[in-house]
Image (tube, rainbow, N blue to C red; front, side):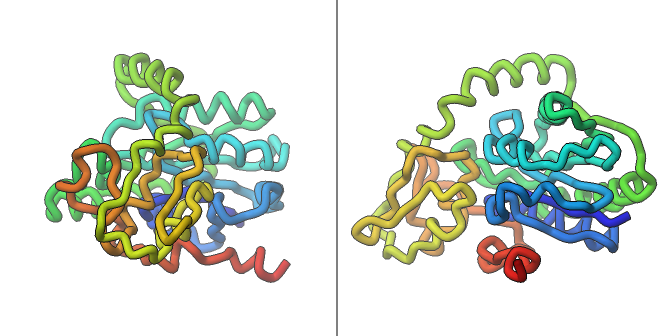
Length: 266
């Protein structure tokens, strides 16, 4: 079954998950949601997969916008992987509802736990723990590939009821405020104006002004700018200077900035 995988990533967890799934499926092609045209979802592939991080216990704004470009073909197989640090909550239920509003069905949705990259709440934890999570995720992706290859209907994975209720409420309250949360970013004296933060931002929220990053208030809180800064000079709030940075160990900076081959050809 020919599959197009559309992924949204900041620090590489979702890219790694999509890449690992593509290898397991065989006949699959990868496309970064942040670097494809608005109509990229109108592909003729037999199956379309969405791989994205959970942002404040919900679907990222950029992924929601991408759904409007998906071809309205109810016969096509749609599935998703929600990458998170242990609290998927009702994210996949939200995605199912968003697709239903567009006349499409979510055949199955999977919760994939990876090392945390939300540095304002702490670092990713000990290296050993990170590797255990990545190894467990690799095993789960193999199972996901088997489900997708078989055209399975279900499951739509979710957190416990209390988590879904409480965190869905938080998501609804915070969603409109997320773009302006970038007012808490700042740079320390180590910033050398290299511009990596601008390159990796998946929503084009950074421009360089006088060799310093300027955030434009359309933030998604992916924190790619903090995690990929070579000098570790970008901070968020008061606590991040003391926390370890994280991006997926098998993902390189160039992987985030590459243009999809199909788009290059067109």
